[in-house]
Length: 249
Image (cartoon, rainbow, N blue to C red):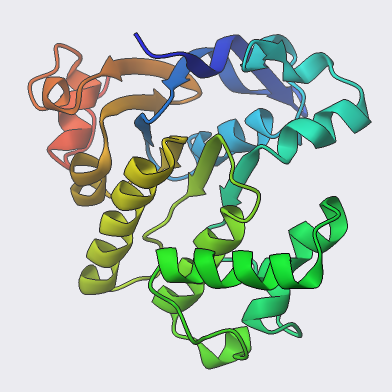
């Protein structure tokens, strides 16, 4: 078993009197691509915010490299966040900054690297995602797929040990979605970082995942190899995989 990068143990979260997460257990190892499946609005993206410490669970623990994230002081939490890359659903690039400036920002704000070192890092990360030569473009000059790649390059700038993806195929056509899938796989293999990928796109999930988990109404109802989901003993999982409505209980 490879070293654990991320562990969620019996995580519970209530907001406004509503139970959002109920006893969630999740683990991601080095180099692993863990895909979290589930219906829209089922709490998948909430898990990412809990991992980043943006939401503090009302029960259980979130550990990064054995350290309990939800109990850290703000400055220590910020240090942990520097080791986690986040790829947002709609890229979240700053529209007034060029691609170069968007990517350089984490290094300018959080490190003491010299301008030449930052420029070298920007070029290296853009090359990784197939976007060399785009340094001087604004986000508005890029297609959706290009912005997604630049968003991934920005997430890689601090060489993270964990990369979080929030619906990476959202808003993309099938051809570009396949390109992003391949990029996630290659990034994982080249960096050795653990990946947690939140999606409801089944084609992407089965292509990318080394392991899959499924969230249903805030509860983790399945966790295992992708092939185990195709004939899972839980009818709710089988219905989701077959893209059929879950039978009433």
